Image (cartoon, rainbow, N blue to C red):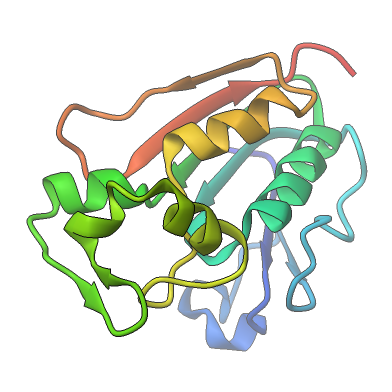
Length: 168
């Protein structure tokens, strides 16, 4: 029920099944890899932002840039929802055991904050950057957003963070 939808991705629209024949109200912007600025979207032009499955691919510095860019693109009063593949919850509620040749098994890493910090910025663990609600919450604390909340369902392996831009 949106008048217009602006979709951003690094994939060409030809590779996205839903965009082979997009409706006229869908504006697709193909970004360059590692463009966390939401290039092509005007500041203060978006009412609602939804991001699904992006943050597990971002280092903390990239997530920081992306969240600040989201703040710039939202209109005052604009809202958003991001799905965050929370590493802690994934293993708590996902029922998986995971071991990596470099870092060891997940149960050991969950207790080792130094390795977690390394995985947040420099390394990946099984192809993911180490993100969790606490880490993303700290990034939100230093962004322009002053209203955000974890709205995840109980025992859900991923996190959902709701946020609202209250001023410019």
